[in-house]
Image (cartoon, rainbow, N blue to C red; front, side, top):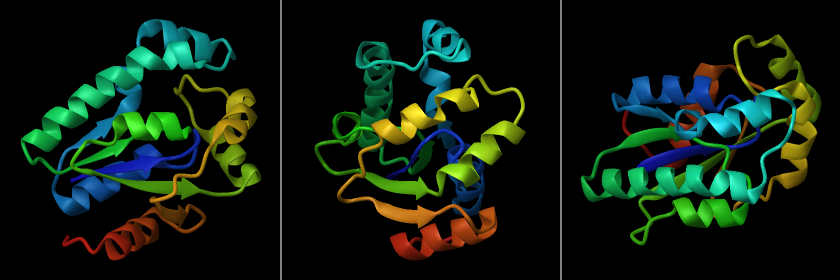
Length: 163
């Protein structure tokens, strides 16, 4: 199973993903690592990505997910996957991917983005992500207000996982 933590930038996908992967003793994959340099430069300059920018990124992710599912490797994946189209592209034919939407208030997430250092995604693009977000129908939804260990506990409980 691929546990795909999705949501807007600053929702905690990477921090929660790393903690969850550690608890489950499985690999963690960050979708940001699959972005071509042109996407990172565009976001760093304060310009949101469009569907054409995302297509090669999502294609590479989809191929990686298919390989992992074929090998039956459990992985925690952090990926924005804001639109239904993106979520569908990442879902495999055997429903190997379980989406977990990490959500919180705009104010909470904005404050987190403003506090973090060394990330290419500026706080100025957060509203565009909230505007783009399409809530997945089959995702487990988890509030990111609690601490990371509490969020991880909730995900494990809601997905009925063994840690």
